[in-house]
Amino acid sequence: MSSLADQDKYQEEKSTGSAEVQVKGVDKHDNDNKLLARLGYRSEFRREFSLLESVAFAYAIMGPVAGASSTLAFGLSSGGHVGMVWGWLVPCCFVLTIAASMAELTSSMPTSAGLYYFAAKMASPKYSALASWITGWSNIIGQITLVCSIDFTAAQFISVALFVGSDGSINLSTGAQYGILWALVLLHGVISSFGTRILARLNVFYAVLNCDTFDAHEVGTSITVISVLCKYARHDGVSAKVAFTQYENNTGWSSNGWAFCLSFLSCMWTLTDDSAAHVSEETANASRSAPRAIFMAVLMTMINGWLILISASFAITSVPDLLASPLPLPMAQLLLTVMGKHGMLAVWSLIFLVLFMAGASQCVDASRVVYAFARDNALPGSRYWRRVNTHSQTPVNAAWFVVICAGICGLVGFSDAALSSLAGASTIGLYISYAAPIFCRITSGRRRLKPGPFSLGALAVPVGAVAVAWVAFITVVLMFPSSSVPNAENMNYAVVIIVGILGLAGAWWVGGARRWFKGPVPNIEGVDAEYKEYTPDA
Image (cartoon, rainbow, N blue to C red; front, side):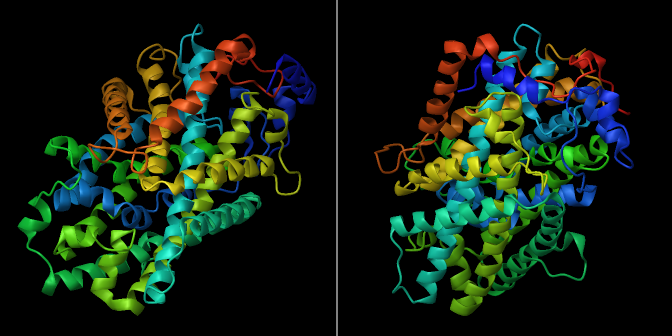
């Protein structure tokens, strides 16, 4: 574990030059690097992400067509057609308030440290370190379990394709799917070790593949799925009344309202909106591009995902039959019914590629979080995880930390409720880390924030209050199992993951970290580490 001795060693590794010396000679990114220096950090990455590439990166992680296809069962079991359609839209409205608040903080403080840096600077000095600690560990949990949940779903995609392609003769065991998960995680670790320029270009390719937003001549995967489902629904689908208003509670919970709330997991797992902040140190004109990327990507994902689910709702003629399918992912059965074997496999391959790229982007995002947290000595073995590869100028060690931890988390895959547990854990961890700095911003941080180009102004407090209240509510909801009578096989292990890891982090805090962890540690001398000295370019 990190200690005072480790911190002292790290201090020796820091640059001894002044802030002005560290950024001297930088050309087109001079303002970005000076701004970062005022925050207390020297620039160690190439700034290869433009606004377009930042939006593509954030959009890649959320991947609405893959997200909606992977989690269709959550809405179907929790409310049928109503759970699918409105169980997506309702939480989206609240997530927009979180995205707006996050964008404001990112515009003011564009650093890879992101959320836990925001929490430290917005909290009162007395609780700054504790706020940073809680936020950082919550985000680490969310980031790593999100990598695992994406790759677990990708492994299911491969299993489904083999089952359908072989007419049911190849039915992979849980152990075999776990092996595929490890292969995917390892491959994503390799991709995450590439240089920033390659990663940026890969994400633009992904964005074009995932939706035709960036190229009017490209027919994206989302448009393909929507078109196919709508064409089928036109002749063999249900009426608009059924598609938008028919409610079916297949959870076992007696309360229809509570069951409907469980359908929110689909949207909440898909809409993770802080990724652009974590690559802000690799983004040109970060104080403007990063916040815009956060909000634009969330809005695009919200609309795209809703259109996919509406088209699916019109095409589904029997919710019970779809849930009873031997295929673990209902969207696979729906596409098989609509398109037949060969058509389904073709579209399934496109969705898998979208999901694969989402996993790659998320692994990159998680590695930046690990790097930033290790840079401030908050992880065991921090001096290893904060190293930046001199060739690629990326945190390669941090990427492999993510790979190992994600692979271990995949052991949850042996449970019947694996996806809901992993999705729930990642959602809870991430959204707690979103709410903490927002809460500090609207309380002790009202006068501490130095607004950047993206500012909510007078709306910051009411928007932030709604965001925090929503996170408190959804955290409770996602702790519950999908069934009213859970057992060892179908219980929601999200609560075990969240409480277990945060419990260990809390014990470490009480046992010693509170005496040496002071929050974000500047790695550049000649600047006042206090936020009061920092003024972003407005």
